[in-house]
Figure 1 (tube, rainbow, N blue to C red):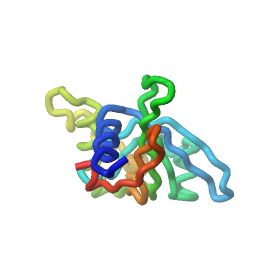
Figure 2: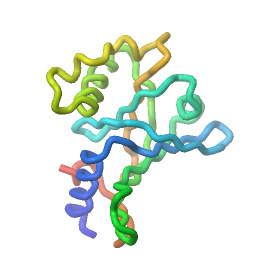
Figure 3: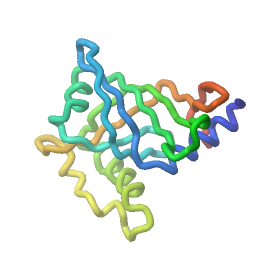
Figure 4: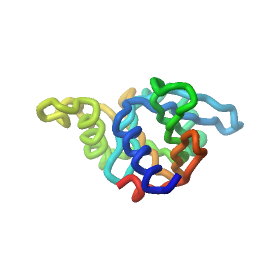
Length: 157
């Protein structure tokens, strides 16, 4: 598959879905997968909110390397368009939280008036129970019946 087609499929899947399956490992390489609601910015950094005491958040603190998959579970058997990616995740610091919350709320509350005003950014910094995390991509692939094609954010337009 050419990169233009792969990028178009990836963009469609990323923009058309709300959840990703996030894979983490602790410091001893014990894996864990969790489903999280996500949003992305124009540079294809991905954001999610989780309680700091969840297993995946604890794993991230020990090992920031993650992988995730986004897919449409309603596609027919034999057609399995998906986005598979890996990257490094970080818990955002106080100054980065407001812009990330705005990005997150625009996806969560799309179509509503003033979506960014729905969440108070200060509810996602220490000592709050919930935190916002950002995944910076290292590798991203579109997978289909034609195999896996590595792309970059610029291929997604």
